[in-house]
Length: 190
Image (cartoon, rainbow, N blue to C red; front, side, top):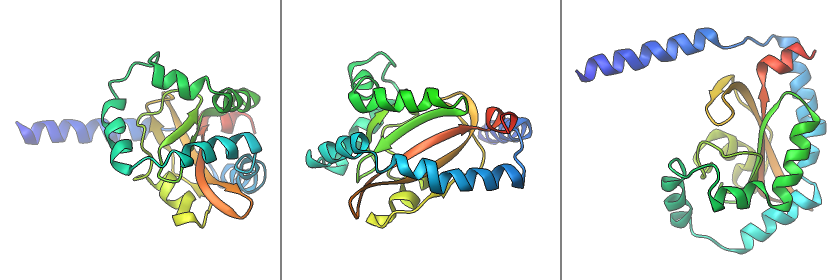
């Protein structure tokens, strides 16, 4: 029975992958260019920097963040914790950024441990610290830009490329930010 479940799951993954939109080198080069100019500049925005600094000052333990992450998936979209992150000053600012481009599927900001600080909508999980989007963009306080491959994102219900980059206060990397690019809308807009 376990084998059949595994086979079924593998079949679903293959079918979903075959439905994924494609992106050519021209699209990727343009995405790289805007990632290292326009998108990277969001990581130095005073409102975003301040929100991350406030969260970092709370000195949460990783164990506390992981406990919240365990409960996150069952947390309803209209729960107080979700609203606090989407309706905060930073969350409202991210919504303005998101509505500025039709291909921005989601945006969220993370603290120095990878916990969510603010977001445009509920993410699939609360703790991003164990995922490439955080690990490669925060890069142990050194910072870098990370562009993922195309993946189906459950929280935005679309195929996205996630562009992640550091949040920088002066010369210090204090967190990270991710913008999910809706691949279909992005490629149609070029």
